[in-house]
Length: 93
Image (cartoon, rainbow, N blue to C red; front, side):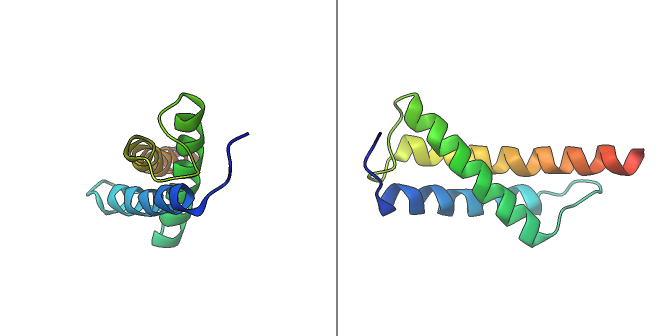
């Protein structure tokens, strides 16, 4: 198990917040998640993507890694997009 460090974790969380905010800010039709939900889901998506990137060898949590942070940014944005899709499916039924 990799040594836990704050630099990588903070980079992932920061990337998730940015990814969540960017995905939330994109002009899209309804439904829209609130800012708080978008940021929380973005951060969770970034953590999941960062862990996946680490498992695939793109970096680690012990230190800052540009590759893992980029994957975390994309994971955060993807998570918010999936939240929008889920909210849209729920409102249509």
